[in-house]
Length: 344
Image 1 (cartoon, rainbow, N blue to C red):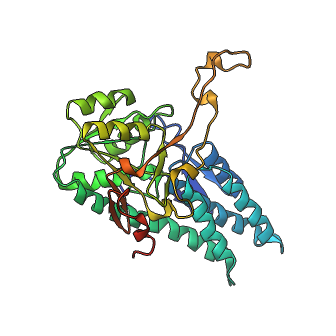
Image 2: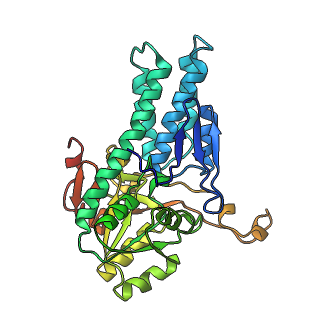
Image 3: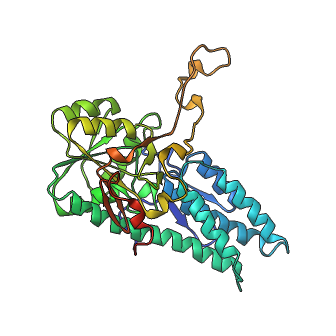
């Protein structure tokens, strides 16, 4: 079901996982090949692969690689695989899809399996394919809401590079662009520049024009009525509809409310953490200050430090719509998103 035109972050070769090193885009397109869970963990930790759904898919393949590695080597293979699962679980703290995918793998491992390597690989491939199917569904549902809109802005990268393929926020933009002309703006997304390096590049691969803006220009763009919607993905959604996403999303949500611009969050239901009541309970990853600081300040005696949170939390009251593969929740602060829990 994959769109052959769209670049893919993850490719399964039959015996290894190929990961597109997104740190090198758009200048270089290089796939690194991993044959064990340790390598996949490192790919996630170092942000070669990023985006909550893609992280979960990569982790599932990491478990499959672990089973392939240890099943024929040792009668204690399950203990070794469990250790790899624990390693994968520590790779990134915020993306709930990671833990959901690992739970799926653990549930399969707990079942009697005639051929564990084949069964676990099939489970990983199902997670991958189901994510792509969900992306296409969300794309159409989101495009229905954007019918008639003339302009959208997106933040970070929530496209094929961040998912199994097609994308969440960019999936909606792709789907609406097939139906009508729409102006697309992308924020550069400091400090890793996922918008500048990944989003506009990915849209260009599909022939979709876009306009890049500095993050700090968004308010001025809204001031002149140039935006109808902001469309973003999510790394974790609390049961009350609060959303953790790339740092800067909360700022955009506040600005959008001030200027009458609507905010859409697009994410599969695997991104919803039903176990937490609000965004206050979401663990937000802090990365190294060295990612933000100029090199001249990266020494122990420097008087200049950096605060480098990777995500922030947008409260449900600032969100106009949450789009999932199971349906749409409009005004999630007023409509209980728990209705999605058992929806088909």
